[in-house]
Image (cartoon, rainbow, N blue to C red; front, top):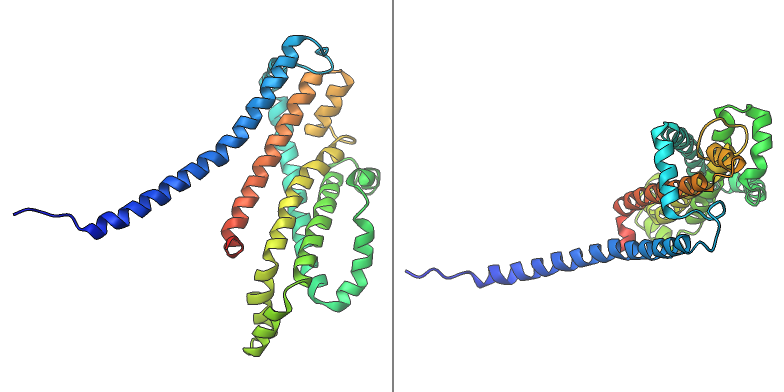
Length: 275
């Protein structure tokens, strides 16, 4: 007795295979394009180093930067500095992000809070983090408190502004529909306002991650005895541009990795935005 395959099985398997293949190609392109870019830049950098047009002390070649990285790793300074900087960035980001989201929710939906605080917060936004370093040292000393303050200040203003913007500009039709259906104020806030503002909130958090590393270096450039910013300052004093390049590249890698994590979490939690 001959056994025949079910045509429906073949038809259903083919689209699934096509979807997996398309997804794999997209993932490969997403990973491959940045690698092509980095390889291109590295190639130009290598050619400049081999040409000898620029002095090593000004623009070190890639192999000198790699040697400096290995040197710092072997003597243990790199691990210590990375741990210190990551800890400061994490604490400052947590404080600033939490305060930013909380206050943004309030100023976005409560008129009294918005009237009392918005003008002052908008006045603070143009003040760069590095300008607050002397004030932070006076207030908190040269310990960890001043670094946490500078980082959290920068993250707070960015997250607050994006959260406030998202909360304030929820489409009015959403609110009218929820009220027409008899939703309470609390339910409206949780099921309508927050989901509508969530993309803006996560955009602010993602930007806050980048600014946390930016302000961290500003905080560590003075009044610190460890960390990436302190090591950059030390490398400048000894004209070790190879170490400076190494630390800057590592800082960029850390920031990019943190950004990818936040972006991935945002896509999982705010999945409706993708549609």
